[in-house]
Image (cartoon, rainbow, N blue to C red; front, side, top):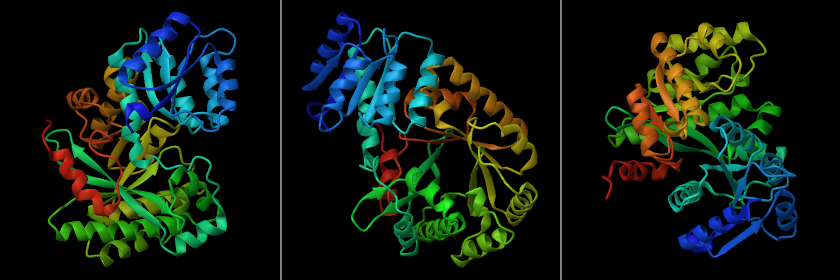
Length: 397
C-alpha cells in the first residue's frame, strides 16, 4: 500500500502537536488524515464511519478519556486496523500498553517517543506494509466448529513457513511451521482464530499430527533439492497422549526423516492437566531424538518450574521482549537475563520478532543463536519459501 492510500487518524489533545503530526503525514504523502482532540471525539468520529482507518496514532496522556482507555475501545469495537502509541512517558509504560493492545487482538505497529519527527513517523508506518503479507480480513471471521472440523478433514489447514537465521553468519538454518486455514471461499484464517476452537472440540491431537505430517512432506522435498532446514512444529499440550512419541516418530520416519531433524515447540503458559503423564511423554520424545522448545519464554508464570522439569533443548524469547529491544532498556534486561539462563542450561536460543537491523545487531552482541522475524522474512506458503530465503540472502542495495 502506498502512502497516498493509507488512511490515518491522529488523536492528540495538544493542538500544536496535532498540527505537526498532520503536516508530517502530508509530507509523507498521506492524503486521508483525520484528527481528533481527545479519545471521546475520536470514538464518535470512528463509530460514524463505514470502514475503520488503517492506522490510529494515539497520544496516551490526554484529559478526560486517556489514550489507554481509548485504545481499549478501538480494539473491542474494531474501530481501527492498527494503532501507534505516541507519548513521552516511561518506556516501561509504553511496553505495557502495547502488550495490552495485542492482548485485545489489535495490531500494534509500535510506539513513537515525542517529539514526533518525520523519520520516526515514517519508520513506524512502514511496518503497516511489512505486516501486509498476511493482511487478511479475518478480524470479524466467525469460526464455525462444524466447518472447521470438515476443513481439517479435507486438508484445508496447511502449514506456512517462517525462516530462522543464525546470528553468527546470517544463514537460514530452520523454519517454523505455522498453521493457516485456507477456506474454500478463498479466505485465509490465522491460527489465533481457529486453534482455540479445535482445542475445545478435542481436535488438538489431530491438528498437531496433521501439521507435523504436512510439514515433513515439504521438509523432505526441500532436502531433495539440497535445502537442509531444521523443522519446528507447534504442539498443543492437549495433544500429548501416551502414544504420542511413537506416533510422531512414525510420522517423521514415514517421510524418510529422523526425529533429530524436528523441534517440537510448547508454550510455557500452557497448563498441563496431567503433569505426570505429560512429563513422561515429553521425556520419551526427547529420548527418541526430538528437540523440545519452550516457546514465548517470559510470558507465563511457570517458566523456571518447566525449565527444571522438562528436558528442553531450545528457548524461544517472546517477540514482545525482542521487537524494539535495542531502544528499550527494560526489554534488554529481560532478554539478557533469558540468554544468560539459557547459556547456563545449555539451550539453543531463538529470538522471535526481530524486525530491525538495530535489534539484530544488539541480539548478536548479546550472544543469541538464531533470529526469527520480519527482518528475515514473513511466514509464506511452502512453495514460496525458497524465494523468501533468496531475498534474505540478497545484499542490501
